[in-house]
Image (cartoon, rainbow, N blue to C red; front, side):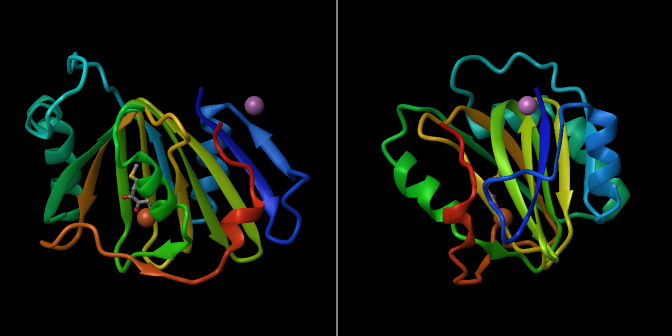
Length: 180
Ligand SMILES: CSCCC(=O)/C(O)=C/O
Ligand SMILES: [Fe+2]
Ligand code: NI
């Protein structure tokens, strides 16, 4: 179940707020300029889908986002627990970073934890299948896929190059809860 837990950015052990109610999560995130919506990820993708399969299955959702916002490129990130790169990829995304564009992700399988560092708070958003999230450009954040990753997400970009990040060098992510 999708969830939002809010912390102060100087107190990682005591959440200030928590909910698994999608409308309440959206309200809290919208107030901070973050888009959060429940879409429909209802296509059967098979066990370990190729990127092309995912794109073809959800072209209608990509088209909707492109028509709305004029996004220029997209890709698929899909990780399973047997991926030999899983520890390196987990470590990479656990470093706080920003993007020069909105981070738009549509989860079509599994789950992952987005952690947004907004002013003096940390918003931990457990995104699951059906969740669309768009984090504003320039928002410091990190992402935890857990030690046994299991998710597929479509990433939509506002540039032709795809994923480009600037790492902040802040070790804040080390203090906050992670997925098992
Ligand atoms: C579910 S997308 C995870 C990786 C990524 O693209 C990113 O920018 C994380 O912050
Ligand atoms: Fe990111
Ligand atoms: Ni909970």
